[in-house]
Amino acid sequence: MEMIIGAVVGLVIGAVLAYFLLKAAFKKSQEDSNAQADLLIKEARITAKRLTDEAETKAEKTLDQAESKNERIKQKKIQEAKDHFAQLKSDFESKKSQQLVTLKEREMEVKALEGEFKAKEQKIDERHKQIDQLKAEYEQKEVELGTIRENLEKQLKIVAKKREELDQANEIRIKELENVARLSEGEAKEQLLEAVRAKSETEAMAIVKNSVEQAKADANKEAKKIVIQTIQRMCAEYTIENTVSVFHLESDDMKGQIIGREGRNIRALEAATGAEIVVDDTPEAIVISSFDPIRREVARLALKKLVADGRIHPARIEEVVAKTRKQLDEQIVEIGEKTVIELDLHGLDPYLVKMVGRMRFRSSYGQNLLKHSIETANLCAIMAAELGLNPKQIKLAKRAGLLHDIGKVAEEETELSHALLGMQLCEKFKEHAVIINAVGAHHDEIEMNNIISPIIQACDAISGARPGARREILESYLKRIGELEELAMTHEGVSKAFAMQAGRELRVIVESEKVTDAYADDLAFMISQKIQDEMQYPGQIKVTVIREKRAVAFAR
Image (cartoon, rainbow, N blue to C red):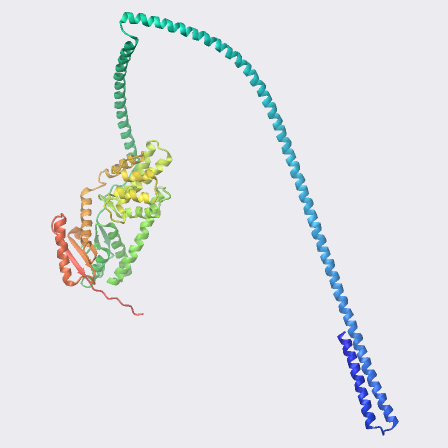
């Protein structure tokens, strides 16, 4: 349409243009000849016709294009309508097929339900028949019971009549006996009961006494048998822990490097670990001495790393000792986990597992505490099995045996005994009530309330009573060494205190910011006086107070 309009507009413009040309020509050349005017008019007409033809051609072409475009749009719409119809038809057919399938499934379900209903109906009919049969049997039994009831009533009447006759005869006999014995019925009954009671008590006391004696004899015999069998089935080590470790060197040349210039390396190692390093004439060996096995182990492992590395100086020593302490903490947890797995005990709190690992580096009267606890746990399991307890009780006995001395490795300081402290730890970490009582009662500090508690007490005694398992003197020595260090730590400004040379020397490391050089002398004197007043010890104890000022800076 736009093309048609453009053509018409062009035609009109052409006509107007022609008109103006003609008029101009007419005005300009009125005087020209008619031939020239005709020529101009003819040319204008030819031009107008040509423009008109071109406009018509363009209009026809535009109309053809519009019709072609409309035809394409029409065909496209028709095709889309056909596709949409086909889609709707397929959707309808699929829904119809699904509905047919659903109807078939419903029919099958209805048929299945009808079958079940018929089966249940048959069962109900059979049940009705059984009920009718039982009802008939019940009515028959009721008739029989009525007959039996009538017979019993007749017999009861006869028995009642006979009882009345017997009562009358007994009254006549009792009156005759009272006349003969000159005692009333109540007096005779009382004398008879008294005689019978005295005889019964005498016989009962004799029976009870014999039973108690026999039970004691059997119990002692059985208890000894169980203990012997338990001990025979448990083969354990019973060696005593020492307070020194020997560190072997590849050559004696390393001793000078360990000692350092003017002894600074060995002093730094002793100050960092709290263990005494003894370098003597023993070939290719250094002795590490400490009453605390953890300190001794830290010193041994740190010295091993330093010797392997070759760089030995105070700063390096402190770094290696700190790393070694951290690694030893991880090793303690691994030891606890390994012990728990070997004993097949599950569900133990991680803190208690760590405490079990700490037992490896503690001793009880010279006996390694972890070995003692493992031995006690195995003995408890064996004894519980010998006593015929169920598997759950055997597990509880083994668990209580492992944890009975857990209070000895507790990290917090307290006035409680190790048994009561261990009981509190077990209670805190949700252990079984039987285990809590067994741990707290194994030294008779609380009352036992279950069969596991005496088993723990007995097995603890068995483990500690083995020949060579314990040494009382060593335990008292270790206790005195620990008290010596604690006494020094009570003074203000003291950061560390280590007992050296089997307790004959006390090295006290103080904070340089809090303690002056003058006060260090006074502190050594005060500690020595306090040791004299509060402790008992053989020989003499040397108190050494060490004050060191250290400045550290980093160049980055």
